[in-house]
Image (cartoon, rainbow over all chains, first blue to last red; front, top):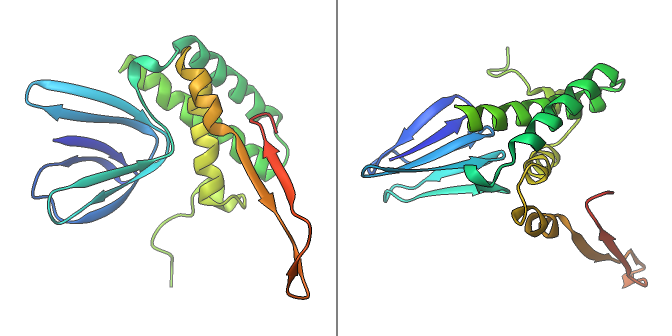
Length: 112
Length: 70
């Protein structure tokens, strides 16, 4: 079973799942095989579940959780929180907000 | 007729999905431990050539090579 962080909430995918296309928000994707779980952090991605019980995850970046450096995450979170308060244009605010969202998701992936 | 979903904040600010997705990916790459980070930074490089067409003929192409700190 695979648990994916869809924009509409956590979604569990088992064999025989109805064919679906879902947008995923950045977060932890966990693959449960028997008693083993492998977790990955994906930046925004899509999941395509096919009718024949195959599922594809299309992501630009998907990394195992232990590749992530917690200090860089903390620093990034502080940087972007600071950028948001000093942002002027809508675009700058959006970029700073994305920075905060991604870093908080990374943070909770490491601590959760 | 109301829309059935709120527009995401980045689209409301004029950003496209692909820009948003690339920004997210860059942020994740910057938070990696070594040696994964150096491998990842090589994925951020872009290298392409553009040529403008006039009168049905291509002009001289320009090469663009963007490194991550653009």
